[in-house]
Amino acid sequence: MAAAQDGNATAYRRLLSEVDAWLRRYYSRRLPPSAIDDVVQDVLVAVHEKRHTYDPNRPFIAWLTAIARYKWIDAIRSLRSRATVTLEDDVAAPSHENSVTSAWSLEKLLGTLKPAQAEVIRLVRLEGHSIEEASLATGQSATLVKVNIHRGLKRLAALLRNHPDEQ
Image (tube, rainbow, N blue to C red):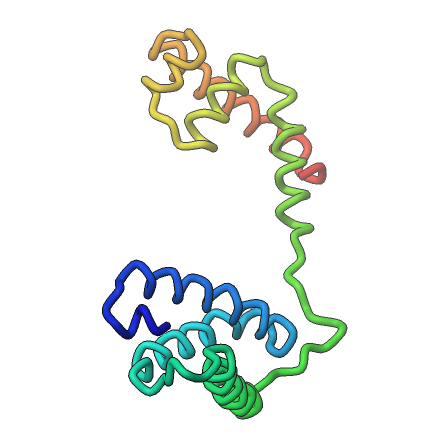
């Protein structure tokens, strides 16, 4: 710190780096992990602003610890004043049953189609690819992709009309 006070930029950078590491260890036993970064930054700013008050004839760690302690007390006060919410043990979570059932039903229906039809329906209708992209991905001509989509969807509609209770 004495070298930093004399204007040695390299010494100052090294000091701040070592102080940062020391503060993280110091606060790791005293604060929740989510608060450590903010308090460390507060101390580093305070060290920077108050560096002129450090007396090189006295131990640096005592000076630093005093600043760290005051910032720690401020952090505890701040944490205490923050509103907290108690979580219940039975937190309601959205059910994904319908999505899972729908996806399973869709795969079952697509499984009844010819593989070429199911593949282009997945690419174009479900994944949003263009006819040209589906053509490149499957090796089918653009016209054949359109025909397979049309025939596949027609077959699916017929299956659903004939067996509405299996949806």
